[in-house]
Structures are given as C-alpha cells and as structure tokens.
Image (cartoon, rainbow, N blue to C red; front, top):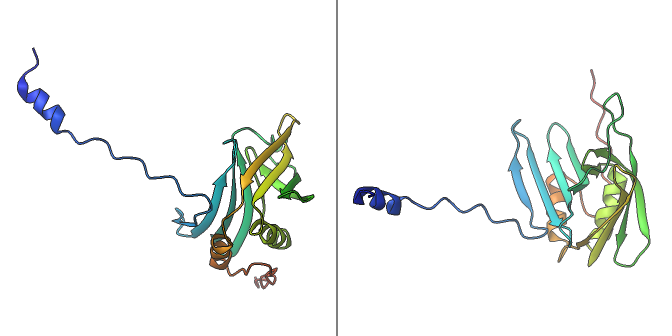
Length: 179
C-alpha cells in the first residue's frame, strides 16, 4: 500500500514546462551565439516537413547574410580531405523559371552567402507565394521541397537590415583589413 503522503507529493509535483512554441513561419528571431555574436533569422518549414528554408544574418566580426536550406537527409558527403564541393541549387518562385546558383554544402545544409545571389534571391522571395528548392541528395537523387513565401517583406527586411543590407541592393564590399 502506498502511503498517502507519497500520493500527495506526486499530486503536488508541477507538470514539466511546456516546450517553447515553434516560431511562426517567417517570424524573425534573434539569438546570441556562444561567442557573443548575434544572429537574426527568419525561416519556414517545407509544406511536406522535409526541410527548412532560412534567411539569416550572422553579425560577427563581419556581417554576413545567407540563404540556407536544411534537409532531413544528407545533401552532400565530404571528400576524403573533409571538404565539400559546391553544387547547384535552384529556387523557383511561384511558377517562374528556376534561378540556380552554386551553393556551399555541409551534410544536410546548403547555403549561399554571395551578396549578389542573396540580394537576387531575397528580392524574388518577398514577392513569392510559393518557393520550390531544387537540388540533389548525397545519393544523387533529385530533391524538391516547396515552401510558402513570406506574407510580406517585413521579416526579410528585418533580417537584412540587422546586417546592414537593404532589400534589393547589393551591399558594397567590406573594406580590406590591413595586416
């Protein structure tokens, strides 16, 4: 027989805290990284749940904006030396033609931080109702994911401005640091 005080103690134990709610699609989020740098991002999950599309500002020693794609499966495998070869990723905005750039890969993650590419992609993104990402998996199979576009340009503008970018404007090159 269980003593009554044990039953009362169990009843008085607070329920575990609920997990933080998932961010709404394209809701800007700010995070302080372990090194003290700040990241601002806005993301959306694919309609089929297979991946996430993110626009991110990493404000470290130099501000960098990237467009990132994270899949649940491997998109690339490293070479023997541990490096990853860039490969093509196409983004199709609504029913338009695919706009392809060579992106960098790291396992399940693909990204581009090329300022001209980021400027073009974010310019199309803010006007799109749907975005389809097209690439290949590490096993060389086609990978397609469809995402809902942002409801307005506000979230993307916020991410871009966190790194000193303006929507539709390629930022000037950073000054070369003297050694």
